[in-house]
Image 1 (cartoon, rainbow, N blue to C red):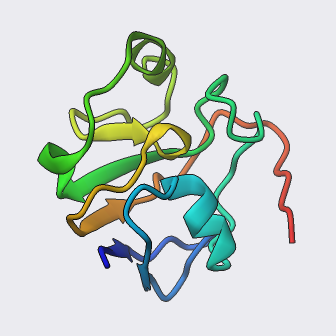
Image 2 (cartoon, rainbow, N blue to C red; image 1 turned 45 degrees about the horizontal axis):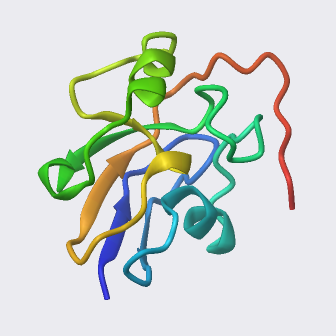
Length: 113
């Protein structure tokens, strides 16, 4: 199974984490299922940028980015060439390393337990 390495993030995942995820699983849903409470204000519908991540290792193994996701990413804080909305990423067979940016454009945190 692919492993997702989440680099430490002050609020979301202070210690960092390594989680195993089934191939084909949605990245955002899988992070939430493993207790990594990444922002997701649009409830994974791909309508905001709060689940923005930077894929520091394994980016080349992801499915191609769609036009709508690319347009939305233009509004994300800390955009990089390896940015993705994790609600739009389905895990392939390869492992990834991701960084959660320090800030989001979400004005109100909607932590779901």
